[in-house]
Image (cartoon, rainbow, N blue to C red; front, side, top):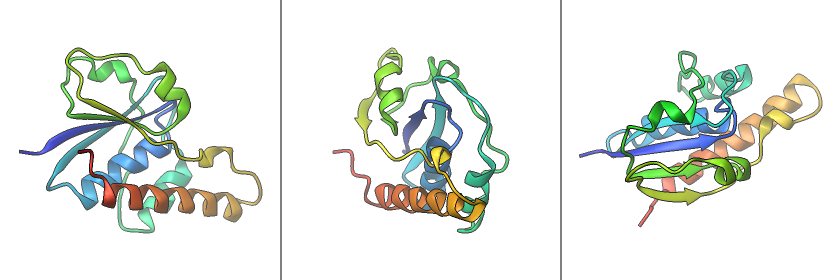
Length: 136
């Protein structure tokens, strides 16, 4: 039976969206991944672009508020930014909480290509984290 995992970030626009897409693509036989935020916004177009570059389509993802999942049991809740870790609500019967902060690529400065390179770096860091994810 697949373990359910919820990736959380403040806006559910970049890191948690990429983590959801990566986990479902790379380890979908083991995990059913979802993502949410405490202040959902929009899925960042650069996140969609850099995920498409590695063959993962998150263009149909939408930002979701963490409250949408209050009634859903998860085996793991992974916060990907310090803000979400501090403000994430507690769920009834929640699973194991894990925190691993990643840089927010939405804060990147420079040309479009320089910004996308930061998105690529974070995507690749997330992929490494997901490949090696062992919550035990």
